[in-house]
Each structure stands twice: as C-alpha cells, then as structure tokens.
Image (cartoon, rainbow, N blue to C red):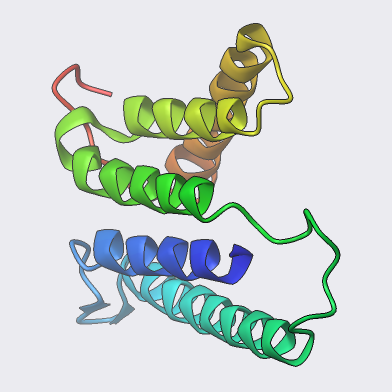
Length: 146
C-alpha cells in the first residue's frame, strides 16, 4: 500500500511540474528538478509496491488473522489522494493539502478531531513553506487565492 501512495505522489509531482519550463536558453529551468524528482519518487514507489506484492504472495497463508489490510480503507485513501490531486487546481494547494492530511489522519481512528486539525495545519504549513519559500516552486492557487 505504501508503495502505491508513494507512486501516486510521484505522478502528482510530475503532473504539477509539467506546467513549469523544463529547459531555458541558459540551462535547466524551474521544472527540471521537480520532473526528475517525480520520476525518482514514482520509480521508487512502483518498486516498493512490486516488492510488497511479491512478499505478500510468498507469505500467502502465513499471515495471522487480522494482519491483512482493510481493502475498503485502502480504496478510500487512494480515492482521497486522487480527488485531492484533481481539486488542487480549483481549491489551491493549502485547502487541498489541509483536507487531505486531516482526512487521512482521521481515518486512522486513533486521533481526536483536534489532533487531526492540528496535524493537517502543521503539515500544510510545513509543505507550503518548503515548496514556496525554500525551493521557490510555485504552488496552485485556488479560488480563495492561496
């Protein structure tokens, strides 16, 4: 499951970075690094998913009851990631990331609503600061303007 999520993150990074100029007249443009980072992340995610699948097939029948993942929860998580990617152009990075992280933390059912909101806010703020200010990567602005 983790490999699939990482592969989706790589796809998202590649898709978002294709809007940036890949090559300028004097060398690599602002889209160069994000495209290749996305390719590496996608490759690593696919490799991790394949290795997990292979390991699960070799250990088939050796799992104890309750060890297997919840396929419905996995489907919901993948669906949330896809909806977040598609809605990011309309809602913007901050709102999409906040809703995604808050929902994912809430789905673990181990945290209170307060913890989910705090985690979503801090994660969104951290990613926003990293991409916007430290890496100077433009982020999608939504209908609200951030």
